[in-house]
Image (cartoon, rainbow over the protein chains, first blue to last red):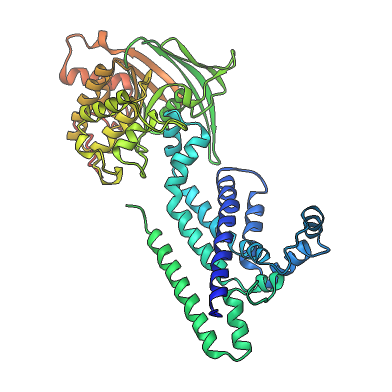
Length: 220
Length: 264
């Protein structure tokens, strides 16, 4: 088996699922924050952006405290479902989601705030209820910004290292993602292998950023 | 159609507090509300459409009560059956002209138009001269065409009243004249009463059957212009209207011949 294969596929799987989870968490949160006015809004906004600022190792540590065998969530998962996220690729998804979702949240919030209120009012006078006008007007008009944010989320999730290493570890063929495999290859002196993996992840990231850039320019 | 509007509303922003107290009624089909910027015209339309909630009052359109504080009636905007042409048209940028006009006929769980509805969209596009642009996006249209899309989109649901917020403000003088005539044609063709707000006396002259003058959040005058106009025409009538609208004292930017804003 090509030793580079498993980390690549695993990375794509983890990054895709983390992007999906980020979308499900980040987009509704962005919509809610964008159109509500309450006192703690700015504080909550700052909290949601925190994962972008904190060192990934700190986030990893928080996750261990939360999801570890003795953590409140970890214990509950263990007792209720008999699963543990520690040292699994699913744990890597959780880590990548936590680190990357602020990107889609931030981009979606800006995109929602750019949607003019009169567009939504027009939809109201044309007979749409709130949920309907969200899916028929707000979301499509904001789509470019949101998709661009999702691309960045995907790229960030693909490159996630610190938090993933702390919660999922470095188990080749199980939790070893591309960026961890690169670290491993360099540490064990496999220069050529490291170079190959570095090339792969560079091309993937450039591709994603190029697509994000294409989606970002102002609408026609 | 009978239109009864009587409400009050306090608008508050950081800078100012603004009391809007509007009361007027009309039996006629074309009501023009005249007032300077900031007089409360747009807010009045939003209240009629249900996009803003007044603190007290009553709004009755053609015998249908849309809002009545005392009887606890407050129909949401989607159930009021008003057609609204927004000042900047508010066309959906992600939909084609066809998609914009057909918007009001589609709903969750009902995405396909019936034969009859497709014919109605096609007929409206034909009447507004938009048939060749059916597949175009609003972003590629001229000001006049956007205005026609907005009008067609508002008329598709067969509203019981058509509300227009300074619909000609963004057009040049020549196009304005033509669009006024088109609006009258459409209004008669669809037999839909309209309420139009403006700060342009030419709109009053061409369109008003009932003139409502609003200043600093209060209706200062409601006039049925049909009886007044009589045999008077031309300059004399314009001067009279300017007096009625209260624009003859002080600076009068809307006097005939002086108001030409070029299309941006």
